Image (cartoon, rainbow, N blue to C red; front, side, top):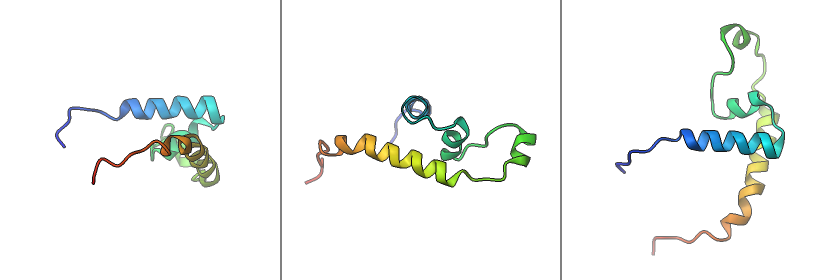
Length: 77
């Protein structure tokens, strides 16, 4: 696919949704994108991967998207 697009809008949209609807921390949201969170000093002291917080975030996203999955139609025959 040769599209002139960027995914930054998806990142921003997900972050806004996650903050407004799940109450997840900024660190958990950004870490779920595999982003380096904070500056070098805060990264040095970060001793967690926020696994449980990210798991809850993905579960919330799954529940949010599940009703839409009923409307998905295959474009392939």
